[in-house]
Length: 274
Ligand SMILES: C[S@@+](CC[C@H](N)C(=O)[O-])C[C@H]1O[C@@H](n2cnc3c(N)ncnc32)[C@H](O)[C@@H]1O
Image (cartoon, rainbow, N blue to C red; front, side):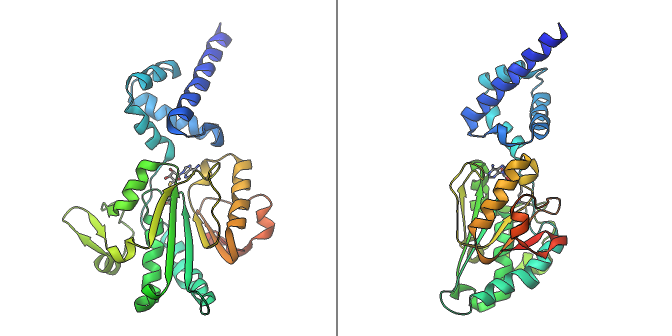
């Protein structure tokens, strides 16, 4: 009897995954099952659903729940200069090395923030480039591309309006110089905003982007199955220009064949070089 109950619950779990795939274009199989179940459990509790079957019924009768679920599944939490010690190395070593490599020819700098959430990683990099380049900033063709699977979150990235919490690691001089404050939120100035472009892209099944001087993919792959992490790190290796940098999250580890290809640049800060 017990076994039968469990298997019908598992069947509902598969049904739920299919429903999510169809409605949110979110491929559940790519994520660690433990992560996925925990996130669904958050929404089941919030909607008072006692099992997967009840949650499916809730989802099909309350369409707005899909967007809540997407929010919960994607874990969009982030802030400017997250892990500021990593950004110190980015400012002092990584970006200067990229700029130096552009001293001749086209002064084009291309950086990818993969799994960019509300855009603060892309904009943190743009602010540092401005800080380093000063008046020369506009003389470079700077393209920072932010991609994410969650299209709603990209609207926030494009707006570039941020709360105190999202600004918590932003030093005062940067707040004053690059943002205007409306009494509640911080608005990023246009000079920085305009160098970043955002678009939806699924890192696993989406279009492969190429030609980058640096790729930041932080706090995204921790939720992926191991074999997908390995594949993605190889994809990033291929997407980088020679000498390009790969910056991972502080709790993430480089695994698979790319580990032998990338040169450690600053392993403590999870920075690698092609
Ligand atoms: C925790 S945020 C990380 C934001 C930022 N990189 C940081 O470190 O603060 C993780 C982001 O990865 C995105 N994400 C999850 N799976 C993805 C996928 N398959 N393709 C693209 N983005 C994905 C989520 O939507 C979410 O916005």
